[in-house]
Length: 326
Image 1 (cartoon, rainbow, N blue to C red):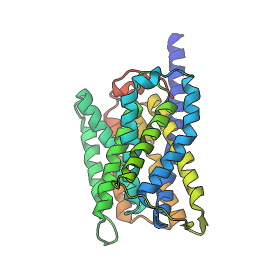
Image 2 (image 1 turned 90 degrees about the vertical axis):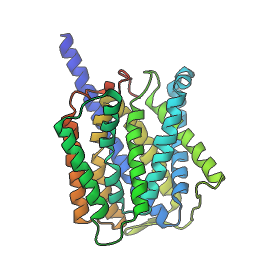
Image 3 (image 1 turned 30 degrees about the horizontal axis):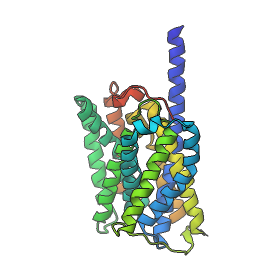
Image 4 (image 1 turned 30 degrees about the vertical axis):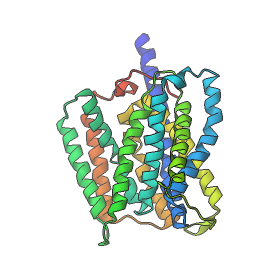
């Protein structure tokens, strides 16, 4: 009887985790398209990211305050985690991604970023000293080959190496996002982690802008998409509420339920959504060789996932126990 109840709980956790991961992937999938619309209209990547993160922080802070119920102990115990999350997973990753989509087609930038699960597996190898299986090695080789095609498989135009560098930086930040999201002392709600990270992100980005380290400029021109235009404030609101607040909270919940590796694997749904959105809203197409490269990345990640079954059995995959979802 106890085993039956345990299996039922495990199935429910899996269903909830997968649903949260799908919501997060769909929400994140829209961000690159909206970001490219803003940069094409004259916004700097720094301004777009800062506005996006600020709106999301305003949305989540009241919810986080309710979740804490006046108990600040979880905040004090997790200050280093919140700081790292805000600096790396919010400010650093989002800025790098926005800089990438300003220089590359959205689909290409995203295909590079979504090699992150391979980086997650690599980190977990180093952390737990897991010996790679043949499937994992094969998957890594396929993923690297796919990245080469994505970067160099365009239509004969010069490679935008600065954009590639930003995309690779965002890929590493995305891997850190999954790893940090799975960490907690068991008492820090995911909403509080997301809100705290967003506040840290706003502070860091604002200081960088005020000191001149980050270019902050914007335009009042309408944001033009394929067949229609939208006021900039509406795009920023959607970026902040849907592609940031909702995406981060659901992503943290998914990672705590599924573990860093499986959550990052499930997030591949974004790869399918974002290029379609980029084509529909921006008229951007991905070259066939780049599509082949993207397919190799996906196959490689599937192989990596299948090659590491024992290391990712759920939320405890990060080696920190079984934290409660946010």
